[in-house]
Every structure is written in C-alpha cells, then in structure tokens.
Length: 555
Image (cartoon, rainbow, N blue to C red):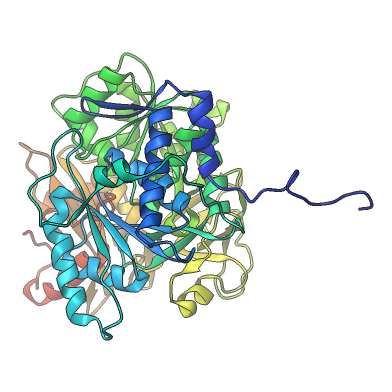
C-alpha cells in the first residue's frame, strides 16, 4: 500500500531471546530459577546466559548458524539456561532424551553433527560411551568429535574428571558480558532440534524455528492462563518438545522455574507447598502417580495442571481435581512444538454429572489460538469427516507452530506434509460441537473380525477397575479373528485381580468384541515423557502368541 515501508523500525525477526532480555529489566530482582537451595534472579540468569553464549562462541562452535550444540541433562538450572544461551550464541540447541542409551545418543550426535555436548554429571558414562561409539563409526579423519562440557550438581564442586575437560561453570566464569548476542537474520532460522518420543518407532529429529517457538511460547501462556510471575513446577522434561516451549513462556511472564531433576510424588507435593506453585504439567502417568501416592493431600490453593501425551482416563481427572488441581487437557505432538489443541472448557458443562464432566475433559478439543487449522480428514480423499462423533479419520493440522521438517529426512517431511496438512497419524472423530476426540493411533487401532477396536476406549474401561494402576492395549495376531485385544495391566500396590476378572469387567461395560481376549500382568515400558511404548508391547504380544493357546492368560 502506498506510504507503507518495512524497515528496522517496524520489523524485527521474532525470537524468544527477547523474552529473557525483557525479564532482566522488568523482573530484575525476582526469582527466576529454584533448584533445591540454589536460586537465581532474572538479572543473574540473563548475565549467566550472555557469558555462556560468549564462551560457546569463543570455542569456535558457531562459525555457522546451522551448527548444533547438544545437551544431555534433566530439569536442572543449566538445562533451562541453555535454552537461551545456545541460540544467543548463534547455534542450534539439540536436547537429548535422558533415557536414551549410548547407541542412540551416538546416532543423534552423528545425525545432528553436534559440535559441542553438555552433559549432566550423572549421565557422563552414557555420553562418554556414545563418543567412543562415534569415534569408531566416523568415516573421515577430518571429522572431529564434539567437545564435551560437564555439568556438575548445582552448588557442588565438579566430580573427578579428566584433565582438560570443560566444565559448565568454568565456561560461564570465562565468558564476557560484552558479548553481542546473535539474533536470527530470518525468524524461520532453526533454533532447536527436538526428537520425537519414540512410542511407535525410532525417534526422528524435528526442526523448530525462532518464529514457531516465539508464537508457541505466547500460546502456552494463554493455554495455561498464566498471569505475570507464575511459579512453574518442572515435571515435563525440558528435552521433550523443549518442555512444550514453556521455558520461554516463564521468561516472558517473569515467573519462577522450580526445577526437579527427579520427579516423584514426594518432590511434587513438597515443592508445591514450599514455593506456592501455581502451574505445572505432566503426562497422565504423572497425574496417576500423584493420586495414588500415600503422601497425597489436599492443596492449600489451586494448581493449574496441563496434561497431554495420552488421553487421561476420566477417573484420574476426577481424583486430581478432588485434591485441588485444575486439570486442562491439551493435545499435540513434537511436530507441533507440543500442544496443538486444547480442551476449552464451556461453562455449561459445569452442571454435568461428575462422570460426564470427566469424560468431556478427556476430549482433545479445538485448535489453540496459535494454530491455523485443525481437522479430522479421510487420509485418502482429504475430505473432512462428518461431525457425527462416529466417522473416524486422521487428525491433521496446519499453521505457524508446525515444524519446519525432519532433519536430513526430506522423504519423511514430504510424507508428513502430503496434501498441505501435517498428518498426525492419530485417528479420531469430530463431535457436532466441533471438538475432536482421539480413537487411536493409526498403528494402534485393532481390527478384530472386521470390527475396529479403539485401544484408548478399552484402556479407559480397564483403568476404571479399582485394582488397576495402569493399562495399555495392543492387538495380538490371531489366526481366526486377524487380531484380538491384548491388555497389559499393572496393578496397584497391595491390590489383586485375575485375568478373568478384568475380562469380565470389560464385557459388562463394552460390546463383547471390544473386551480383551488376553490379559498380561506386567510393568509397562515408557518413554521418558511417560508415554507407553506400544510398539514394544506389540512385539511382546506377537512373540508370546505361540505360548497362549487359550483365550485367557496371565503373566
């Protein structure tokens, strides 16, 4: 339009780095990070990040804005600071799953071509073994192994380490406050690489941009209904979708990050009361741990909890809210920077019966304010399914908070974006009010005698059994039916139940074909974010098939 120009006065590429810079002024003396007896203010956190960025730059890591700095650490202050310091240095942050073994860490370091890896002292053996594997698989003499930086326990001297090993606090001490922070030239420049959870197969590396992180951090403030200076308890791993982008959200609001290196019910309740926590997040397994803890007690004030990663059983939501937690159900994926949809609560639902309210809260809901579109489509025709709560299609979304793509995997990126939408792989329905509800992952739907069985629906019924602590359902190959539902169940401590009881319990509440034919009592394999690794359960059910000639079995 005539008279309109774009210049440095009215256009700056957005980046979450600006949140920290503002917090250092607006919330200068407020507590930014708490870890045990260690505390920092926003002014201190800002200075530490600048100095750390300076040292990273001096190591020659950031000769290119595409260079990667990896970190293998739990939710400790260093992990939080690296979310700012690495992009401030001009590099790209890669957060590694703390439950990966050395082989997988080595694979990801090689894939990302990381120049530097920060490692928490308790995970040093894994990192060193990964570097040893990497040294044996490196094909050229010119390729250098990443430099290793040791993160010691906060407030304690570094543990014994090889002479010449770099340490986290030494890098901060040697850094300079005069360092000129390197901001992105293009807001679509990469800021982080985050691995998918690996619930169905090996993880893929997802590329996030400064723009996407900036937007999703602001969206998270809205979704969590955060006022200024919230107190956030870190139960969500910061390596998972960069903690749903909330590290940057807390800086934007000048809040306090209460770090937990190990998540237990005791630590959760202790920190909630000690620090007057206002917000937290976690997968349904975290919520389940809270409601079943002998240490559980009603809260003195409301704590907002965002849960996601798997549909929470209605009974879990009800018991959490009885303790004083206000549970909000979000839905998304690593490819969507974490949450993509929110179960936006309607006031008229307040008058619903208890069970109906809990069931309503398990729906995945509607797109959040930062997502352009969310729909349930026929994956072949790309037409929207009817909003009848019955017709199943694939959940798809598109918008500015969708990944840039999978690192070094153009084929997978193109497949994921086929048709101009991100294909989640989740199967669901659309209700008449526009809210979506998952029925299953496409790989998790069980076809029994031509009938589709939703593992999510069956799991919710099994979980409502008073003796059940956790449940997961997969398909087990069957010569006659094709597949039959196979339930893996973990019982509550001190409780007992037989396979017959569980099956009868389901038969009394579901159509006969949906009830499990096999019940196996076992611990459920989990990702570090609390998601059940169903591909491992499917392998186990398939491998054990020849040993189970009867319909009912127990392990």
